[in-house]
Length: 351
Image (tube, rainbow, N blue to C red; front, side, top):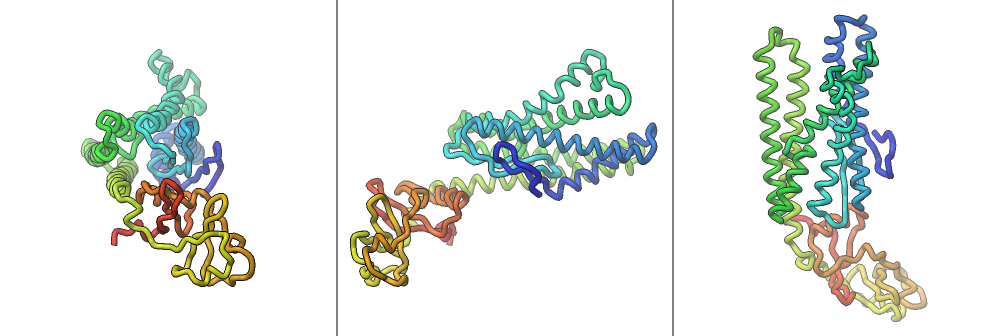
């Protein structure tokens, strides 16, 4: 569900975030029932759950600011059960840019939790000395943001710490695929550790039934982490495979005609679609279109520059072009502008 935009980036809340609320509200309510009326305890618990959501959102907005500052586009910000996710796209991926964007989110969370943390170390409590419910909210904000920062700094994908680790390994080895694979396996190990922690917590509890919400939350979290870490590795392998496969191996032949020819020349083309050389680029025309009068240039539709890929382009370049514009086909041209053929989504198939 789209709720807002920030620096042009759409912000969405997923239905899984409601599951987070359903888990966190009973946890808070049980702790508040001892000193607040039931209705008040539930209301405060809902407020605390919303506070977690806002803290996660501010964390993700840190990623957005860093992405924009480094010249990247942000396709989507998503808030869900596991936390948040910011989808970033740049023309020139680099380890340094990945490191900056990944680290900014935890830094925002640390900044939000730092005042309460300093107050706690000074002996004044994480509530900055405020009494009652306001103090409890301040304390919860401190704990939430420090917890978000600490959890996200764990060095496994898809967490921010995993992206930082991946960027550092990438910079050290020059091999992005290897970096992603290592960080994804660490992410799976973290997922297993979360399951172990849940079992340990139940085993040492005086009343194991009171731990059920925690166990559910950790189980969902560990399953999500495992799945996302594995997908990160699979996606990296796929992107490496596509980047190693030149588009010139997947070209579909197409006739190329001079735009100065009469429109009637279109009927003699051998391919259903025809490229037309124009004064300032390329155009295209359908062989089955009514020929009319005048030149072929007048009959053709100009081809936008982003529909032309270079001779050195790979299938990964095609995938990125399709994600940007979703055009049905693209022209592959030599360095001198000579069209070599066209490619479409079918070139991404391994068949």
